Length: 91
Image 1: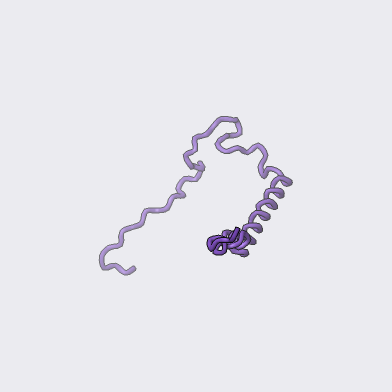
Image 2: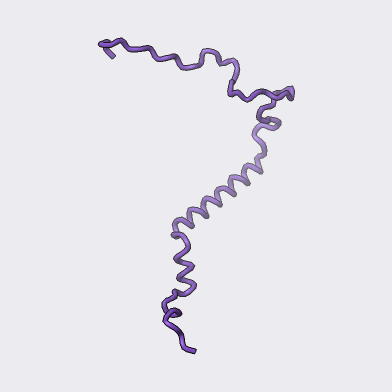
């Protein structure tokens, strides 16, 4: 059996794999990102919940509250409406 010209033009497997992988700096960044994610997960697991018993949308009595985004007790905190500037007035 003789080797054909198609076999000679095909790059070896190692070169094909190297060509498909991203740059080493990108791989390093992804490894660092995964390592930091694992570290933060481990730290969060070790510390535990920040506010035990705090659940979104539940009051202290266990009743569910409507999620309208209102914080309550924050009257008058809205931005004032802009006043129109008369023509020719100094700014």
